[in-house]
Image 1 (tube, helix red, strand yellow):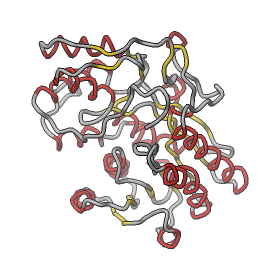
Image 2 (cartoon, helix red, strand yellow; image 1 turned 90 degrees about the vertical axis):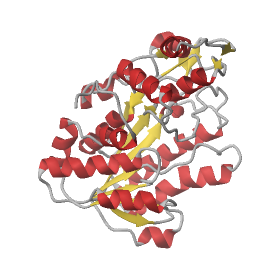
Image 3 (cartoon, rainbow, N blue to C red; image 1 turned 30 degrees about the vertical axis):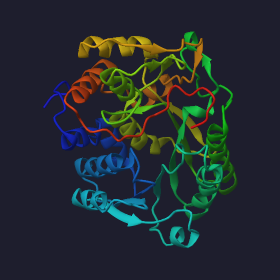
Image 4 (cartoon, rainbow, N blue to C red; image 1 turned 120 degrees about the vertical axis):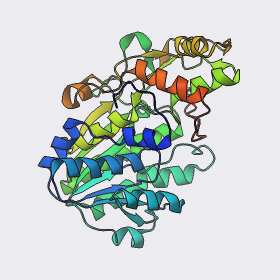
Length: 344
């Protein structure tokens, strides 16, 4: 199997999303102790947990990989267990349950709330701002790789190539404010308790069932207008984001290091939609016009530290087009990438 083979089914997709890079294998070879992934039942968690398990095996390291989530779907628990990943059901906002979680020197913190945050802001603030502090107290002796988001940045002119890590935050909307709050709370405990942390500002992970590229493809396939309000965006293959997050353990520090995880290109929504129209042989319609600015991140520092993404965007577009044409599964979770006011 080569990276250019089309992806046949969900099993093949998840196998590729969980294939560790050489850098991820080497990072886990150097790491000591067990690994806990908090919030591992979401979009990225299952394949990240599997990648960690596979990287350990390739590195010849004996290590527990423990995925923690509420796990509403028992099939996911069974699947993870079948791949050698331990699972623990836990409501992380229940501090008694959190206190009983296994200790581990390595923690991936990927819990958070985005969609639906407009309707229940109280839960969004609890998950995104309160919970990180509780987790830092629980795992004060651990390294923490914490997922953040490019939403902490303001909209930036597309011609500048995206916000860099040293640029000042400027969150738009209440959800984005909570993501900056998450970073500030993690930084507080990193500084006061000496917890080594790295903050990964992801913008945006993409695979065939989910992501901006899949959103645009499905709209074109269905004959729906493509919104141009957010005229451009970043995307990175979720398998590459997974691998980079495992490599990030070597960068944990106090105060926290900050790294953007983003693809190398600024992708135009109009051109992407027209490309799918050409591949599908279907007309494309648009709504609105492109603004001069967008929510964009510059991923160069991450590429220098972790290596260039293994899956180029052209390949991802080819995979998504084939997947949508064949009626492949969707997670039915639109990204709302066109949102400019931060109301998700």
